[in-house]
Length: 295
Image (cartoon, rainbow, N blue to C red; front, side, top):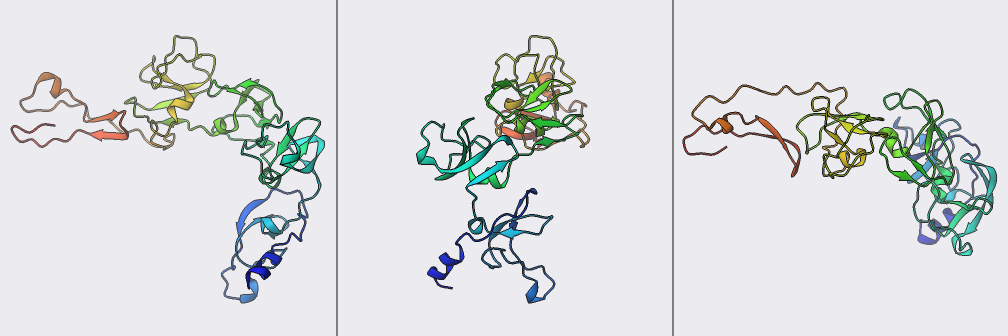
């Protein structure tokens, strides 16, 4: 296939036939050995490349092969239809998608009544209307798709739109905060810390940034050290957290026995393992045991 034929094959030629959730899909052979069992794009018929896929209807097509309708009804903005427009023709938006906050492409969908714009990706893959994450909360979170300022109960930071709300408990979360890990290790503290939606009354100082924590919101606290707490966002920073969820992992037992050979009293009680701000994992105390050598 030459370049001209390739470009012609990518002319949009198929509509999305359903309103089911779509997933990203790689067009490929089914693996049975039958050459007729390739799964082609419903638009151009090609059997290679990344596509979108409906698991219910078995619809599949390259993104480029999909006809973009002039007007859509978006599940997260059901009050009004959204019209397909060129971004350059609308000069009063903030230039970012209402949901994913990515910069808008040349073509976007827009509601002029509510001043909401979404990119093509959030048209194809809309955010979920509800999220049930039992490890995070006992109730279902519901998307409030609107531009309203709120304070996230999990991290204590202010958001400007689209909170997920628990109506029964009357609190709001950023979407990213729903999946915060429950139990973690950080390199600023020797014990595990656990996530909570409510720290409780107290004069809390973050063990990472050293700023005050609003105790009416959530954070991470240590069960062994009652006065230790960390902001949720500080605790899950890449340079602080080792990246592992430890809720279902048994805690490592510390070796408490002092070292038996000639040592300073302070050196004899050094912990065998220690966390350090310069590294995300625990460091082991290396013992050579030869006279004149250091730990």
